[in-house]
Image 1: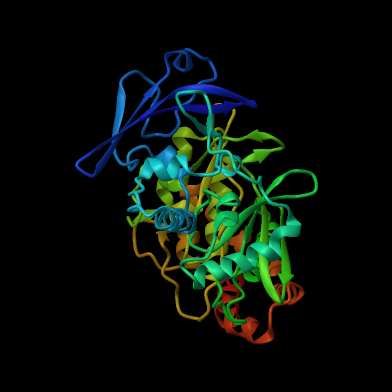
Image 2 (image 1 turned 120 degrees about the vertical axis):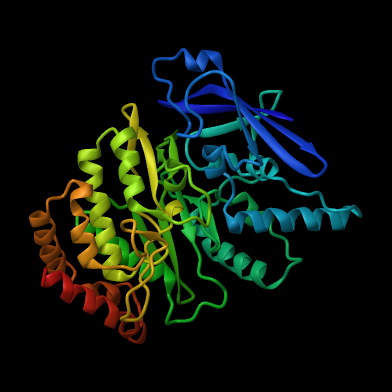
Length: 409
């Protein structure tokens, strides 16, 4: 099989290259070749560091080495839905379920919701895949939440509505795409069916977004709804500008990493210094995000939870996302280390490494003290989000201890 890959540049779908899929003895290999006309464009840019502009083919087992394409594949939640849909379809048709290879999953994503500016087309010029019913509206959220709950409990439930509302944004939590009254694309993150009132993940994530915005960190537009007293977090897609798609890659793609590997934020520093269009702005903010992560114990800071948008012939740090607090006063083990040493959260280590992020030590210490002032009313923000007092106290010991360390810098 072969597919046309386009990159949307300034709202225009520009043929960027061709993706080839080959299946032999149950193993999938792929290759990608840039289009010569794309290479000749003045505004052409590489899809990702692992596929630099130039002639020749780029080969991969699955899509592992074509990370820009891997970024716009379905997430773990979406993959589970697709696998289940194929199993149910095969059962109804009386046939054996097909093996869904990575390219099958890639091309099965709803085109309206696909992450970034890459799009895929078949040999006849048809975009893959157009939804049957369109992306739902906010009014459909209670129904989608109910569908997500049923899907987690019943392997044979009809999940077509969830597939149409699917997303290629990362993570394992139930989610769906939706459009607001202006037609803008948002992502809805649902609670897991067994989520307790202490966890209240959506409300806590929204609390973190509000606190980060108050600290000067770039955040996406967001809202938190209560549906039957359960929090549903809505986040406006920052890889869209109206109908225009913005090129996006994950932090893992930026450093040419592998899922499950051990990495440091300093590798993102190197990427921005070499490929960024405004590293003098983005590096200090990356450090500020790391400092905030130390305060709330954001242990899920793996590199797919960092992103970059292409701008002015370089990459810019995308708005922050997927930041969640972790209860407990003990040091938290980060998925991505601050430096190249231990992976535990530490305000002191963040300050010691600040110069790598173009932040002078004196400025870093002053920022710590200012952050402590801006975050001292974090409980007020959490209460306004409807978070229970028991949950606030559950998180409080760790956050308060880190704020005290900030204030003493």
